[in-house]
Length: 239
Ligand code: SAM
Image 1: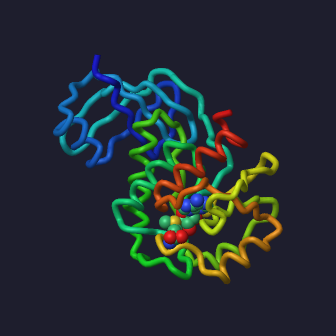
Image 2: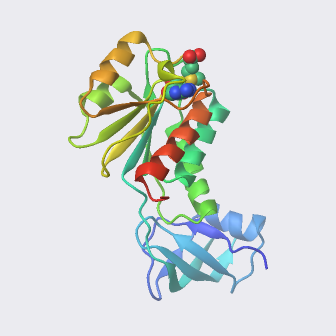
């Protein structure tokens, strides 16, 4: 039995709700996947949970799905942001995809002093987060924000949000994660790491917990996955 196609739709989902397809979605379902009328798909929209919906009509230019029943309630991820300095394109794509799968609620590319790739296509990264959510069974697609300077993110830092500052200079130390549940953010630096000035400023923030990710220096994409795992096990929805 082929696994059911899961599709994000920007449309309300509910009993008997008819959902029009975009041209792109119709092309995917009917030209690429060649699904016949009557096929049942899984729909998500980041608000109403997951719904079974049947293809009522369709052709390469458009179509309509008819919602049948809810199969999963909305499962919000923890209130966790992932801040990361963009690196090479493929690896940045990887970070966004893993953050969506691993339960980040918001993904924020930030420019630090040593960031060496500031060309970030927010729309492409948002599409990666959407696809990862469709594939991993999630019901909520994390927002990927436009790339911002770390300085301005810190300046507008929300009251009560704690920061897990992954500092490569703490490599080998046992600086684990401690703190209370609630809104958090993880910060991962670029290939070049953090500058001394950034390190001093970040460690001094009252919201900051400085963390080591073990005895070896991890690549930024590896570090993002490791930090997300640490946080989820200690404070998130995996423990
Ligand atoms: N250029 C730096 C160096 O060689 O020391 C490495 C930076 S590392 C590739 C990218 C980011 O991953 C770091 O800024 C940090 O956020 C995180 N990271 C990697 N290894 C880490 C570790 N052992 N402890 C804490 N953070 C780590």
